[in-house]
Length: 243
Image (cartoon, rainbow, N blue to C red; front, side, top):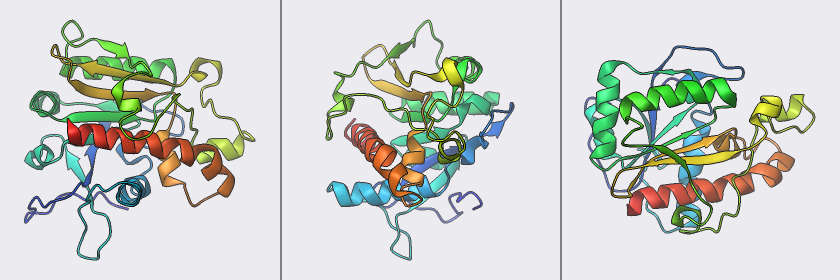
């Protein structure tokens, strides 16, 4: 599906709409697809389940389906969305304009959640790119402890699950670590501002969004991974909305 960019007549409407960040890739990652990894089903499905499992109103399109949008980081409509999602950020390349725009979005109240990047090299690359946006001397990356409010704002989440892509899971006969020993541990890391506000959330060595995207592809995959993925996604959205 081509990116669903905001049209020239875009007007903000009430309700949560899933907002995905568009970017140009500058390096290759196995099983990676750049900005559109897990798109659009993960965006659609999380929005739908959010509306069913909570009382959160969602924005709907003209057909009555959950609305979702893809934005370039330099697009002013980005500021209409309290949460921005980006996938496969081990491949991302940010221009100077995108660096400045993303920094402004985050410091003006937005929250970024990035997911589905695996292993040392993907982490190193993302760490360098986000460091251009938020200098680590002021905005260090830290582990998000499991007693943080985000993990219990709605659902009680007791661990960060390792969710593989369904393709890797099939091909490996049920494996979950897509880079072998170097990606054996799924982690959740974060960047806070000096006042303690959460700016960036990062799930590394796991593909939480595949649990949303692939909920209907396999009953076994759903039972193993989607049931763990949705509580994390819903908690993140609610945390971003409640600030």
